[in-house]
Image (tube, rainbow, N blue to C red; front, side, top):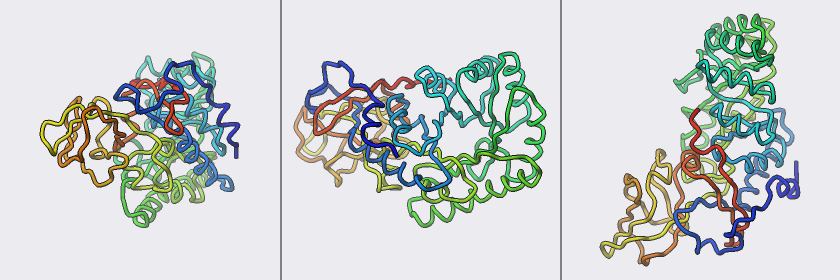
Length: 376
């Protein structure tokens, strides 16, 4: 596994005037990342896969920050990066990261041409679940003179994209191998309908039962004479359960790099490294405080945020565009800085353009979030 020196070389200190400043003096709201805590998370996850056949393919959608993606690779035991969108993959390739999986279907003439062009400068794989997708990608790849790698997506309970496990996957795979410009690598399966099960033993047993459906489908493919080099899936909440199963090759964990309120409930062995520096802007009554961020600055689809150092404070609602209202608040003063812990890091990072990186209470770097807002 790579050491601290490799992680340090994965990010270059910027010349931002905020470097050296105490974080409490920053303007708000500001998205913060505790570099030391994040590095410990990266090292912990990498170490788990040090002696396992399966390896990491960290998910870029969590943070959308090229510097952090490179640090995940530098931490070791990673084969490449997972993306949610073609635009994310293009950004990574622009910055020299060239082993990429788009864990999604890429559809539409414009996107398919972009995909084929990207495949000329990066090894890129995408998910498919219909022959129409394969035919379009094949035509574009042949025209561009590139090769696009494919994973047949298998729906193991998420109820989103993907074919049911079993014979239908085999039939599609048999068709794929006939097309030029594409190469079948294997399958993708995500037990996303189970990653938020709070009880860890229950989550383990249910997610392993779901992933076994994908592993059984892999065996069907192999029995049919179709080589499978990759079964990709899993998450930060299931890395040590489904990610350790024989037959799973790649783990698309993402949240461990930053963590959030929900994932800390699921995997408390990782530290919450990301927070939003906010300020109290109003005390309309003695027991009410209003903070200067809302749903435009913090993802809330997994519930209300928390407040660092105030575990007993319960945020009763989180509906306003620009405000969080805290009832029964402590005696916070107007202008007091606080660290808000969003319930979901992925959608929070997508709303911001930079991480202000800190250690020991002071700014040490500023990392662009190059892919924030990219939906295509």
